Image (cartoon, rainbow over all chains, first blue to last red; front, side, top):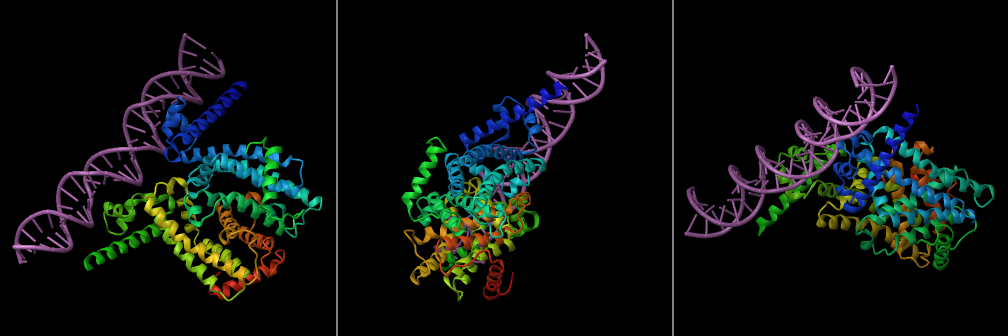
Length: 239
Length: 239
DNA sequence: CGCCGATTTTGAATCCGGTTCAAAATTCGC
DNA sequence: GCGAATTTTGAACCGGATTCAAAATCGGCG
């Protein structure tokens, strides 16, 4: 039965190989120009073999987007383990998310495309399932901070479940990415730095939720210090 | 020169005809199955003629998404003209947005797809320009309420420009749509009614911004009453 | 009205790239 | 080493977006 194991490992490795190749091709030629044949060729496999792993191009896109998510989970874990107040950690998730998307705009673009009905529904059910499952840890990490905040008295749920309380912050970050990535939209509306604004609005939201300690969002210098500190202590100074 | 005018009118009409046909086909067969040839056929025109209006399929998608936006602008205008406090009107925009997307999920799906880099960048520059311009009124309507709120003392900008202040609410609603439209995501996270939560979070955000009069978001009965009233007085009772 | 050059429309042909599947190669158990 | 089972291969297929040369229509002019 060890043979079966090996084979499974080999197949899993090849899947990574394909995904890496796809990622690279996307960075090189853009999401638009990704071609299945190119992916296969780059790995020195036949197209047919590629299709044993991915039911369709859409299936591959969703798989790739799912794999990318792991990165984000790692960042979130680091924030959750940070020695800081619960509110600062909650804020930290948003900063992590922001930095992740800033550093890897192509990841966001892909995730956005993959969550589009056209692509999402064309992926295999199994693949969708896996993708959803991969996003679960993100939610749990954030919720655990909410729960801690409630335990230590920083926050009152007021009838919300922890996951429901997270929804606002989650939607805020997601929506900001959307806005930031439509070319020309910010220029037209004369908005300079959407992410800095997002962080400020998140603080407004946290104030609205009465998550202690209260913070004055209009104190932009203090806000920038918070971000700096987070970068120093959690992300090894990478901005 | 009147002949030139007539011709221009005819062409514009035909453009509407094509867009209507595309809309109908999408409702019928889904976004996924939209075919240029079908659109042309449905209007009794040759494919080539269709391509005189739209540089590509993507171009048509963006055009359609732009045309759909007009609907939303109308709703927003109604809200802006509503005899109610500034905060309630701000809240009303979110409700309008929510109802619009609920009633026309396919509009959202399309807008989401159209704003994807793959589609957006494949549309003609001219088309993108037009699309951005069409979204401008939405922003201006909302900003005007913010400005009124500042004038009448309901709100302090605290260093933000009106459009920057709107960004939070805007991102919140956009992000909520994203979340609500990924199949299986809410089920997995055990969230029942994302839009009701969104409205609640918006109230938290408005509280955080100290937009008067303060409202207690945990009073869900009062929240529901607000929505009901809005539907009655602004949307002719259509929920 | 009829003619001619300009403009518009047409749709069959082209092109592109995702997907399939029968044949070839490889693996595995004996 | 053999044959069945499994895996890999890539040329062929196919659907659908896009093109473009020919046909039709239009508008002005004698």
